[in-house]
Image 1 (cartoon, rainbow, N blue to C red):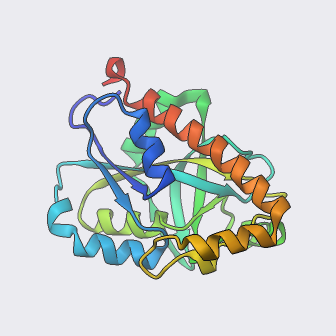
Image 2: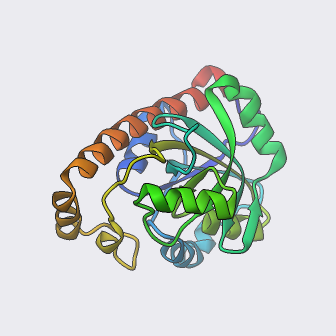
Length: 225
């Protein structure tokens, strides 16, 4: 679907990065980033000399959580804008419109919210949707948008819902290091403490990762390039 320069893909490290790479059939620039806004900002600033290419476009990909009943696990969403606290970043309108036209009925246009921690309870999801008017939540979107847009780069964001708004998931905040990596032991403890929520999170994540792989393959299929 990309008529000229292929976009650089930016995606959270780990399972999301691997899912995107599995969906690609040709060489493509994929940048794994840490989890969490502050870790993302530090990482991108440290690597800005390598990333600097004002002629390129950036497509941010990954998973997200739903803040509204209408968005279910496995749904593909395309951000129009992303909010963080009182700040708002708009995605590039032309690039976003191009993606929306190509994905058509496969995708919903949404307002995203970036959180500093894992939003784990259904009650908090409802509260955040009411005060922010956002549809989905992530932990990296705003910082990534802000960095590349300040550099004059066109940015769009495609994500897949991995947990719905009606159920709790384990609180994994304590398992995330300051550098944005996951600590296996605290992660395992958080999952064990809430087995039902953990099972739901695992199933949702596996479904979301599969769809993330599929939408990557669809967007970057050779016949669409």
